[in-house]
Image: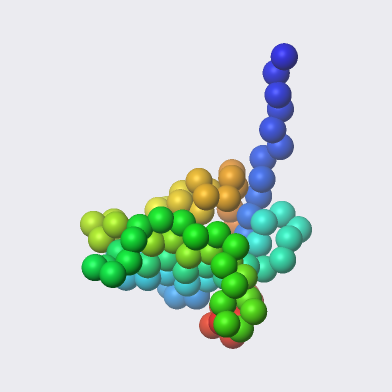
Length: 105
């Protein structure tokens, strides 16, 4: 018996212009028809552990996820999308404009 899985799609908006080696990445994402969620990617520093923290709620009430990567990771669009896909099960991302993530934090 063969299981067929429907591909999950997501939309993403980056707060900053993405380059090849970002020190951090902020933005918003939406899965399928869900609500807009905030995302934050950072490089591990001495006091932070690497990993994914989902379903976070910031002081403003906005929800989202935080991914901290090892300090030798080059954060770029491809790495961010791959890590998000792995964490959220998304197979296809489309880049969209708005909302502005900084207004939601």
